[in-house]
Length: 266
Image (cartoon, rainbow, N blue to C red):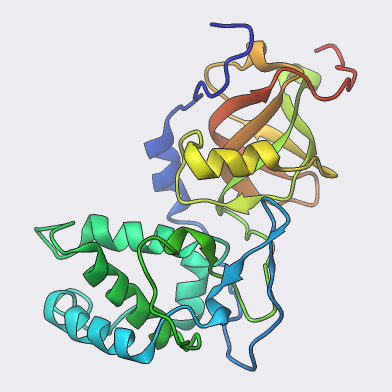
């Protein structure tokens, strides 16, 4: 292993953890509609981004998407697209690209990814319309889905308990051989349990330090080479009055130091 591995993934027993998290308690998020709110801030980069409240699709596009959805999706989804609280529980805090990729990878049944990107984007537009996010003058495009955030009308909500998240902080060795992420950023929801790549990795690299502390659970293999590094950790968030924790799916180094932060001995 090199002295400073940039993005070496630490993944362990991901499938088991995903299975376990499916039985956890769902957390309610508000998704009611009112006047268009202020433009929100992306918690991973603190940079203004478009959101689903900014009119990112057209009514004509949503109508095309409805026709396509009824033709290829309604046989399995007889109640229509997921909506309101259920939709926000699954997708709030992510970007529209995550929804687009999930649909493309799973539909139509038996022939995923068999439609054009434009057709899948139309279906996404229909799902946004079903959830009463406002239409606009310009159609949604496959090139734009990664820059549009899904969130409630009041702006970004904290990641709920048991959500799959990514967090950036300083990796230190705590008591009883525990690993701790100190000076950590606000947890950001993700749909990918593996170490980040591309734009998601860039967001982690640019994330500022924060005030959170997380005890890391089930880190395998042990991340000893990353001690004292600025790291990205992914896993399932466990909020607890006794101390927040992350059941880890991946850890990767982002920088070889934490700006001179002293590291306690194990």
